[in-house]
Length: 141
Image (cartoon, rainbow, N blue to C red; front, side, top):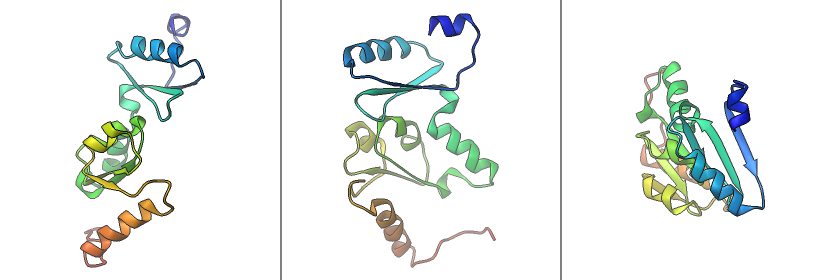
């Protein structure tokens, strides 16, 4: 990282995968000290390093707002710590999968079927539509 910084190389995201979990933990602890970085993982043996603004939550918010939608009109799903930023935001529905990381489930508004059960996301959308009488409420054409 020091060498990349020295050379002024602009990096938006770095994925690290390794079996050396001790080294991965050392890297994670060091990088988490930098307030400009977001450090997460989707599996026990990886790290995903991005600049703060490139996390899923802020990126989705920027995108949906560019389309004219509000956070309340959006449902997001996740299961790993790399989903934490979007699931901890105030989107209309934040849904963790049943087999999600415990911290992810804690910040989510809802928990649905495991992503190992085919159709967990479809099931949740179907249940939401049933509660709304089968109609999508929207003022958009």
